Length: 380
Image 1: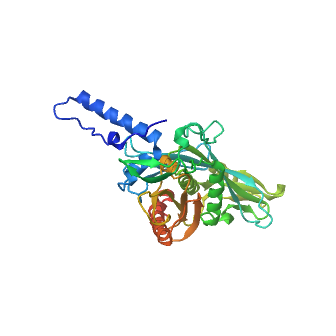
Image 2: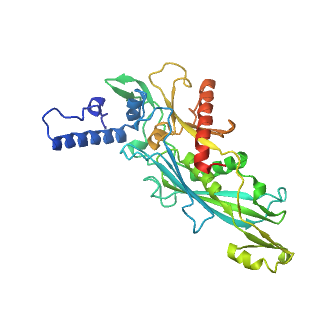
Image 3: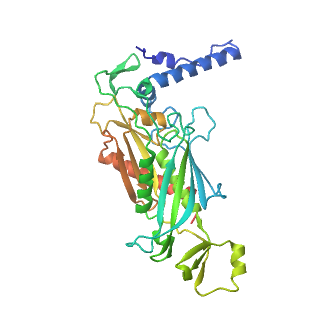
């Protein structure tokens, strides 16, 4: 049996008494850091609760605050037609900062449009991970949970505090963290891009009923420290905003053969142009309103005696530890700058919200959409 570390040890003062030298100060600070790391690993629910009971989070953010978003575009120019990297957090240089980083690259294929949509192109999404993305990912990109590890097999919090420590109820059924499913993220991004009107599929048509562009967005999770689905969607949108369709030559004599032409080649070929050969200039895509996701983790508030929905603690832009403690109970609202709700997605059986809470989440989503639109896709 592993005894619960008391908060008296966690809250031990790191500042030594007057007269102590710098070496003792460093030793005291190192000891406190070791205690905090051990407490976080052995009792993650209690660790999170000690912060949320003081209306703050382990990284110092208030409940309603997201991590800063950093967007870098056009950094993979050699093998892609558009690329982007999105980072959530991690720009303050502190040890407590947590970051989620994702890169995306767009490649182009020429395919045949469907019979019901002869002028439409298509967008495909591929999300991959590796052991470099996080310690739980295997070489196949799957995230596994070790049931034998106490960190992944803790019970739900219930009861009152006793001497500063939340006691766990052994009779409560175990609620384990949910692994990251890259296939689920792929499907969600694909649905959101299609339903948000961010990309007009007719922009991808080449020859009606014969040829159309197929954009493949390859997303790689570089570092996973929570809320990776939001980062992946923003990164995919930033890569599409950076995408430029190349100049092509359409030869109708051979059934509509498409050949990508460089600008210097086009200048040479303009002299003897055949009427059955058409030159299409390269262009960027006309973008619609940016779909901006806002994910919130839902934690139970053990101090509250009200209903489950009204006593929940809502953590905006959760870290990986906060996602684990919430046992996958999250909601995601996708909004745009026009104050439209594109999608509302709920995960977990305990992710219940009142009407007032849903209205508050929508207001936060509208504000976040207006804040990030210019950052992700630039001024339009």
